[in-house]
Image 1 (spheres, rainbow, N blue to C red):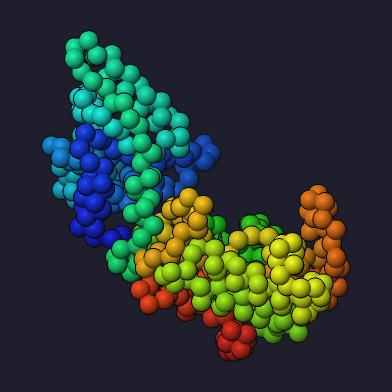
Image 2: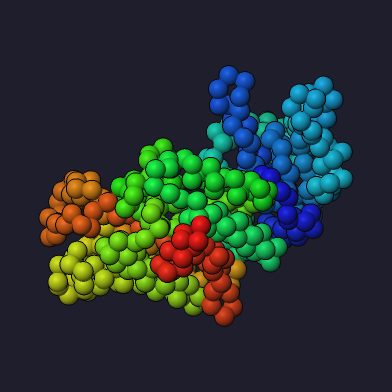
Amino acid sequence: MFARAIPPAVFARRRQTLLQRMGPGSIALLPAAASMPRNRDVHYPFRQDSDFYYLTGFPEPEALAVLIPGGDPEFLLFCRERDPHLEIWHGRRAGPEGAMARYGANHAHPMTAIDKVLLPLLENRERVYYAMGYQPEFDRQVLDWINRVRGKARTGVRAPTVFIALEQLLHELRLRKEPEEIAVMRESARIAAEAHCRAMQVCRPGMREYEIDAEIFHTFVRHGAGWAYPSIVAGGDNGCILHYTENNALLQDGDLLLIDAGAELDGYASDITRTFPINGRFSGEQQAIYELVLAAQQAAIAKVKPGCHFNDPHDAAVRTLTEGLTAIGLLPDRAVEDLIKEEQHKQFYMHRTGHWLGMDVHDVGIYKTGEDWRVFEAGMVTTVEPGLYLPAGGQMIDAHWARLGVRLETEIEERWQRIGVRIEDDVLVTAEGNEILSAAALKEVAEIEALMREG
Ligand code: GLY
Ligand code: MN
Ligand code: MN
């Protein structure tokens, strides 16, 4: 997780809020992420579980956090014991002493003591909060504990009877970002913005996509961050593959380069996409598509404010794109309302305009309450990321629409092909409107061309 930026008092405050909302008679169980094997003796770099980290700040695998409202203790942490021999090989461990001294646990025990310590705490407790169905082994473990408590029924012990998905409470907290998190997200976005500008500065025809990927990663790491998701570095037609990750093609003179890359700083993601010409100059068609996507993005960002609902930015982007595509002849010259109703834009814009952003790049938080889209509130962070994708030949899209039984009304003329554009920013809802956290990543045509000229 690289640099640690959130102070311990913030984790303590979050635990208190959650404890209050859980109410008496309940207990919450949160397992740490598992360390994942990659190949013989090599593990994937460890990434802590977001929920667990949000409440503990504890960075190690093989741990379990327990929260008990009104309990003594209220915050219990099970973790790996210190082991001088293993620590020489695999790195330092906090141990139960460190868990109490540095991570605010009222009590901490080695993982080996779980059954002995936890089972009595489950007795006569009515409600158990935990994230069901994400870690099968943990699900089995919880059921085993419950059954063992049930096994003591004849001694008068009552086992929990209510099991509640923890995310109901926890993800509502995570959705509204606190000032300390906003500060980290602002920095995460600033780092990613710097990486995108560096990519524009170093890009030349004849380079490979992975060379640009390396420049981006270099910028992340030199600021104490990592990536939030594998960077998409997609030249030319590859820009029309939404989750392209091969990143090995030659960058060709005359093509665009689409880069979707975000940093992760102390567990907080940024998620930025920029598209620019590999040779530093947009062609007429590239510029027309680019400026249409930019106009759609600006229309969408204007709808990120308190009082608007989550789908307003998408509706605004779709309207701008549909009008623009009609004006340049890529959609038929019919009433825009009809084209929107028929979802004609989906030929060229098949994804949605945004998602919550936070510790997870596609962050937690429900999008609808009942039938209604959620209304934006200050402290929520969403991406705004419209795009247009006009692949070589258009075959990919023809086949897709044929499967859906839709007859395409337009041919993509050759001059519009090999153009994939997405522009993505991270937008914080504020009391007055919004703040674009990723604003330092240049996106006006003239700014991009000037930066690429100056190098
Ligand atoms: N980078 C993934 C996304 O934009 O949603
Ligand atoms: Mn995104
Ligand atoms: Mn993205």
